[in-house]
Length: 162
Image 1 (cartoon, rainbow, N blue to C red):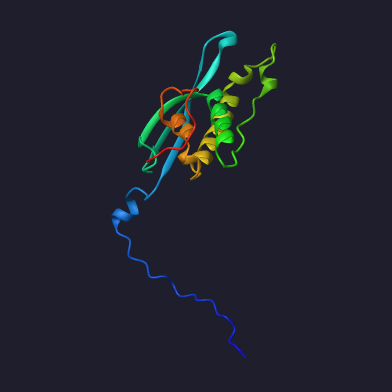
Image 2 (cartoon, rainbow, N blue to C red):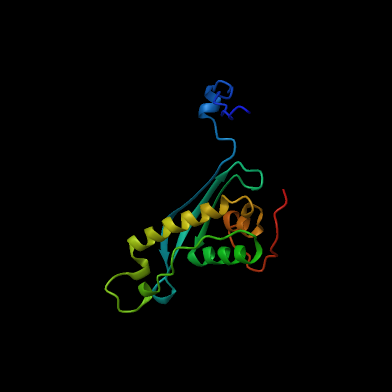
């Protein structure tokens, strides 16, 4: 009769942590903030832009600190490009809020502060989920979105080489 299997509960030997380990930068990090929404234009040409700041030490990104300005439609473009060219499941964007765009509303619609903040949070969650995916990090469209001042919508899709 064989002995019952017993789990090995001994602790792994770990090296003592020094101050550099405890308070130094993490070995790999990627931080993306969507902040400072600004509403521009007037009337029917009114729109909101957001600053998108990325900080990283991942070698795949050529810039370690970048800040770009993006509209909701730029996030839609990124989502469409990733769905077409990558093998990842792309998370949803915050909704379009079509009812908020109707005329003769008693409020500011899509330009109301509470809506803009709700959308900003949703966009930040979206871009962090995308950029945190190892396969998405190789996509040229993501690099352009995060690091180029303007998006070249005629770019040639593909992988980033590092």
